[in-house]
Image (tube, rainbow, N blue to C red; front, top):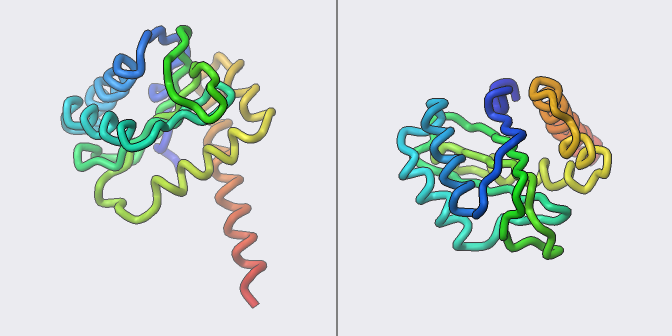
Length: 165
């Protein structure tokens, strides 16, 4: 999972006023960091995904994502936004915390669904949410997220092995 999230993929002090602005920021940063070929193409794919069904979860979190031909490298961004974002969520909470998942079209399998599942499961844990909301050191936050995602993946493999006769 190394390279999935880097220090410069973590944005802790943003202040976007709308979902559109925030998704535009994600696309622009992805282009700047050479994760996608065009910000316009990625933004179009992010907006199309949101139009299908909101990626808002609960407790102020959302996981906007896109499987896109414009993405060159599977990546995760974390964004902490100061302003309230109007984002449809399961509990009608105001969104401030976002994990953006950017997946290459070649990964047409279910890698993005596995990543969403891992993150959504982590977001059920109070310790995880508290750490995500409060940590101000990007490197520490990156290491923590990667560890939690790796631990979850390892647990799933162990569970699968136990089911095999």
